Image (cartoon, rainbow, N blue to C red):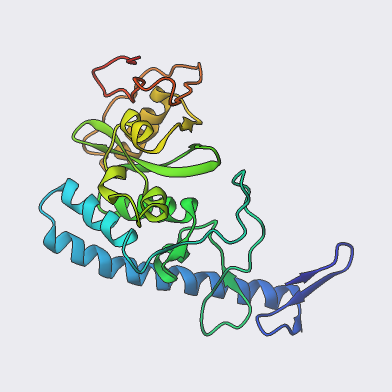
Length: 248
């Protein structure tokens, strides 16, 4: 699309000038095709995982192993040191010629085997939730803006960092970033700050669990308004479970 504010010019995938209505129709068709291609690949993956895994831990590991495989690429192009993403050209989606899939969403992780932290964490959360496992994206700071996942498993909050596993796969065991307490991630990978409190994070997971399992509701915890900052200087801070208080 080529837009000039004041006079808006709409262009289709071939660069041809079209009406607003035609552009919106073709653009929605493109988005639907991307979603359908993604869902088809995810469904194949789910069939494979569900037929082989015996419990939730194995399901999560198979998903994690898939997204951290040798064919997956963490794309650092266009990333500044402070974590700000520059505008990229995106990933191709044949047979489209110029319209692209961007790593601000989950699709490239599955369709292009590439992306950044938010790409992989969104894909991981989406697929884990499809398996009935409560999983959310955690936003924070690790020296740069970063995103990873938290899951509710065996009544505990655990963290999974696909991006760090990919970035460090040449010199670090990817098991170091799978189903860890936040303090363990800090010890292994250095300081990180969550943008939410411990209670808010757990409440978000409980809310997701309740959406996935309406027949087995879990009560929310009382939210602490004070922001919790997790750094390497405070290694004992952990995410609380349902029967525990904050531990420092």
